[in-house]
Length: 400
Image: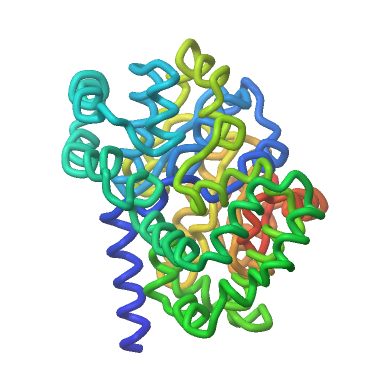
């Protein structure tokens, strides 16, 4: 019980007061197909690093409401919005593509800071120089924040193992999956990367908290996967490196190298999309630092698309009453036949459907209101470039 309390406290401390995600770890390519966005859609998404909020307006959404209780995450999205408004593309790509900007101090104070909220100003006044202008070994924004710190340690570990460093460079440069597989096997990447001590570290809740994995998610995987969380991570890394194309997998590239490339990056970092955002789309994104429940209760409109990421994995074990309140607020604010998507570390989520909510017809369960498109979800999950979630869900909320 004491260890569980410590784990929960550690995770809560990291997630409420630190920048955890410096890049989104959900593949928006499959989100686009799941959501089928159009110009009538008002979308609610948990902010995370803000990459996917920008992707949804590029995909055609009318409005995107980015909501996060973690103020640093929203400060990051605000900085991206400010950069698109105020900078030309080369500086913007240097900032968020390469993770550093040589003249950060001047650009931030003269161009970016004036258009940030007071909360975002305070955050970047304190953190910006370390994150974007460092000349030390962590000379990329993507090696900062808690997940970035983990990525930096992993990068140092790989770099100090000469055989692994060469293999990783070769893997990222490979042109085909067959070439990747040959490199992976020739260099014995699995055995070199996942030594016994490394596996022990991967099983620690404090390690997993740095990359946003709560104890409840670790338990789900331990219960449902041979070899537990360490085996799950090893198998998923092997699949990404040896069985899936790495050429456009910007998720893994940025954490292996600390930067994107002009052809392997999120959509908002492509020159043409940057111009579209700057010229006509940016005002479609709004940022809200609050809980989902409070946002939904205060929001006056109806939401046609709702993106819940994987945060219910944490809520159901730690705050089940809050999870129930969240679904009640979703039911109250959802447009007719709203589409809801989420991810989970578990291979079969069993805690959503039994939740009871009130509707115009009386009390019902969420499961009675959701119509799952399991075939579409399975097809899209198989194409997920990130490949770290146990399951993916696509559902229409009807019958309210």
